[in-house]
Amino acid sequence: MEMAELEDFLNNSVYPSLDRLALFSGLNPLTQGNYIVLDCPGCHRKHHAFVKQNGKLIRCNDGQGCAYKQIIWDYLCLDLHMKKKEALQLLAKLAACRVSPALIKMSDSLQAETLNLEMDTLVPIRFHAKKSLVNSLRMFLEESRDLEKKEHEFDALMERLILEFLATNHPLSEPPDPQ
Image: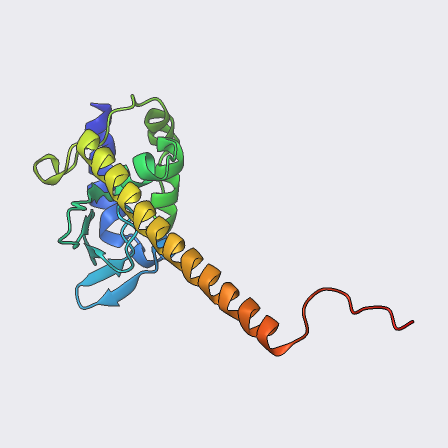
């Protein structure tokens, strides 16, 4: 009964008037027609995720295996690690609606289960965590390869500069004493 009450509040009071641009301000939101395009919370690629202007599901549009799908509530509670009470208060504030103290208290006592408002469209949490970890590791390895390549380029450049310096200047040893 508690979950149903919270779902009703979110679906009927919060989501219809939620300021999604403010909610996703940390993900560089851009309005494009009926959608808001964001940096993906899963693969962290710039402007690869989207949410409908009046929607509650965040999806990654990346065709390379990210598969991020999360409802706003779960994004706040699972990805941002917000307490349910804090998530409810933030959503109510950004939707400019009043939430009853009883609902706040009830949300604080909810178990760790997710609020599956669109059960058929959500990727299971374990799968999401695994995909997110794999994508983060893939990005780290790509960055590591780039850094290794840049380090080799830097070493080659320094070697060339030292050789040019030695060829155009006196040796680095001290000059003999004029006695």
